[in-house]
Image 1 (cartoon, rainbow, N blue to C red):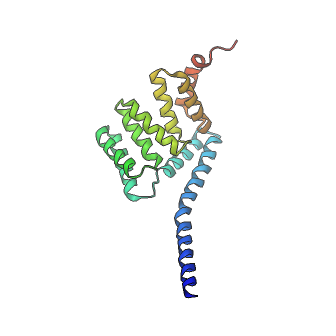
Image 2: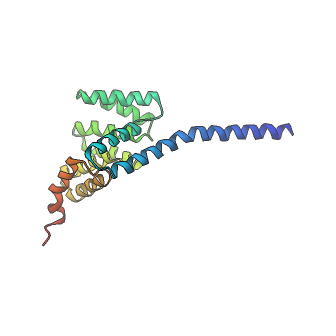
Image 3: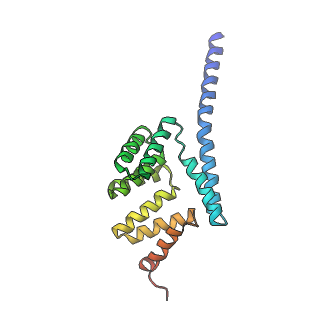
Length: 187
């Protein structure tokens, strides 16, 4: 009988541990989903900007203080155009936290800043595989395709960004710029 009680207690403890560790991720996903909905339905650019900041804050939480520090240091290096240091921090981040979409997004920015479009696109693909609604990554995909002359793919990526983030003036301008070149002129 005591073996059954010990087994029950250990299974109960395991179940509680799993619930405890899984809930923060679920809460994070729920909060990010709520913010994405708020952003797509924002009634003004000011509201959209606030929601977007909150969403990026959610996306920037890796769950590990060490990984958050690598992200911060990489972003700090990007701000001062120290691209090599940024690449080193972001590469370490993606090596140690390969399921953290924001790490891949930041790595893509660093590669893009050094005109390494192939590695930037690879990092963007990782980002979107982990977070298909990452409008920053979608905008990066659009920019790279536009730069390479693949206007149809650029237009499609930009169009998806506007679905998620309707008040993005740069993306709306890009869509206007590409509209007739991709869809032709209406008669």
